Image 1 (cartoon, each protein chain N blue to C red):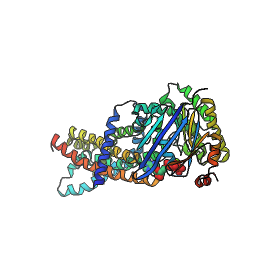
Image 2: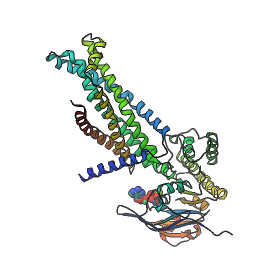
Image 3: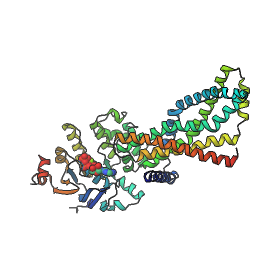
Image 4: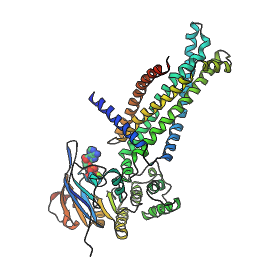
Length: 244
Length: 250
Ligand SMILES: Nc1ncnc2c1ncn2[C@@H]1O[C@H](COP(=O)(O)OP(=O)(O)OP(=O)(O)O)[C@@H](O)[C@H]1O
Ligand SMILES: [Mg+2]
């Protein structure tokens, strides 16, 4: 038995934009190789929380630790080094629209690996086959559906084989079959590569498939946390409304 | 007023970041070339049409005035002087402030609101270098080249217009046109558009890079880039003409 190691720790995070307090003391803990689902209503600061983990937003107060490093105090080059260990799936996909799918993935690989062009193309095709879009290489993001973009964005997020995957609503806007596909992909990543995942999701089906721990945010605080069953059986009206 | 001062300060800080990043690795050579190509090819036709019409109109309008003083013969000199020293550089830069300033602001703005800039940041791809430094350098290089194109076409247009009213020999036209220009004037007037290019692109990048919100804000950013960019071109022109008078005399 190995002792569980903390891959991600967020301690008492506070963040306000102007005088709008978005996060008011959020703490999150993710063990290496675990999957944590962050749930909660729209506008409660879930995306803001996730962006803190990669240093896109700086906290007003609190600590953010990723792989033993204090993200909010790293200098630029150390932060960039850490970022390479993290794959980030943005809420809207955030594919580079001026580039084809292949170029989107190659852009990241070319800059951060020493692979030859042939090896990179091989990896890219492997990655897009992995998200079930093997023929998308030459397409531009504008030519793809929302669900396809999400899957390509997932492929881009994991192309550097990160240790950590942060997903902002990986399944929103997908049909139930695609929700299953994407959720299964996230599970496979964990099984095959031992990736630690934090996923924001509104989607119960997705949460049920991937999460071994759930966190429910409300008005900038953690309202409840535990296994999905624990959350589901909570008496709190907000949770009951969420889980229907 | 405080808002304006804040804006000026923020743009200056942005320009400061540009210089801070300019000499750091990685140098985005490939992207720089792509941007120069885009900048040139996107605006060449516009600049040529502008130049041609300036040349024709200037020639038409001046002929009458000069004739009244019996000085019709100096038309080529006058045309060359006004186009190369002032009208070419300024009009080209203003047209480009509209075309490129708005384009840059809209492009970066939509990349910002769709989180593409964040995506570059998170992938450690240094968006400021990749997006801003390349675009600004491209404008610094391309503004003078496009200005030269504008000048040449304006003189051709002026010559073509003159042909309609008199059969002026082109060699005479060229000789006369160039006799009044000093090399230092030509070089300075053309090179100063590098400064205009810098201002226009820095303002365009700044407006787009920090957009927050959605499509409406992107549109506003593009509009602001054009307004501020054009104003800066005009103000900088006054300052630089003054400087050139000090350096090279009238
Ligand atoms: N950079 C920013 N500057 C100012 N306000 C911001 C910024 N980012 C987010 N906000 C505000 O913070 C609040 C929380 O945003 P966030 O995107 O985290 O919500 P969310 O929980 O992800 O919601 P959704 O489920 O709709 O994605 C929103 O009201 C948003 O307007
Ligand atoms: Mg969100």
